[in-house]
Image (cartoon, rainbow, N blue to C red; front, side, top):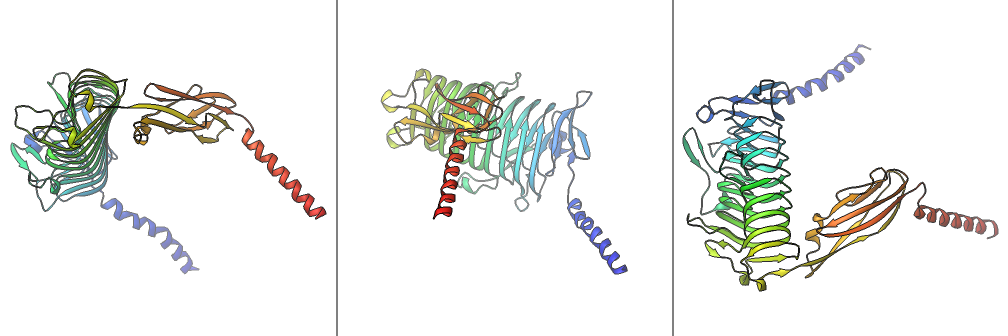
Length: 464
């Protein structure tokens, strides 16, 4: 009996001991007030943090079990310092003012890089007077970074990391111009979603939104989606500064932007840009050739100008030479909906794109809580671009009390009645009707078929 009691006690206590190491290895956030000439740094060390203000309007960083008042000059890192690796980094900023917020960590030592596997930064308000960064500083790696700007004032959004930076009045450099792909400052993939933004904050001269990094940094894939915001004094650039971006995708659906270009300096293998709304001042398919001596190499650029307003459209340059459409360096597709006031690309080098939206089925019968997919097909002329536009379709129901519809066109019955589901692709609109009832016609048909088959089986059994 005693052995049984001891066994039960051991079984009860053992799981508690097994969980102790997991708590022991957790490193709490660390505040270093001496960082960067006493500007200050907070290292989240992989912990979830929230940036807000307190009752005295001071910026405060909160985490489970602690908090820290920080100055406006602070840089907040999702990762840590030399030699640290964390699986996740999740930082949310609701209010306050800081200088920079960085997905990864920082390391000045090549032999002791920092790494964060998955990082998310969400800006819901406040002011970032410096940079929102998808990577880390110097010898730093980030596997995947997700930067979401829902509101707020931000000077710069940098998808990659900083391979060149000044810390404590000293400039540090990582990587080499001769082998950009081998840079030790790396981000495998970054998604940047801007739902609303003021860039830069009103007192600053200009702002930037980069898909790549700063210096000789590496970004494997960069995706920028801009839905709205005031960027009337900002540059939006698919690539980065001096470094490498493998694949860049940019979608602009709204907002006001001063200038757009595929790259600033460095190299971008391929850039795909889709404009479905918004207002852009100067649009460069390639890079803006200026007098600063900078060179940007764009191997392939494809632009879809579907809707919105562009003041001036220009081909731009690659490696300081004009882009050549005859050499397949770039292609520009346009629709009749796009408004371009000054188009410097010859009409014969633009491809007019027409489209038509179709839905299937156009009539649905559902019961409450049942769901069915409406398939939306976009037919384009020239052919072959249908799938590219699929994510541009917007869905809406005229009565959520009857039926709802997801962003992917999945309709779910809610209550009895009839509702209209509208799919909109640019200026083309199609409507499907959904009827929510106790027993759908489709179900009734199967009930009748099953009843007939059952009756036949009974007759065969009796007389056969």
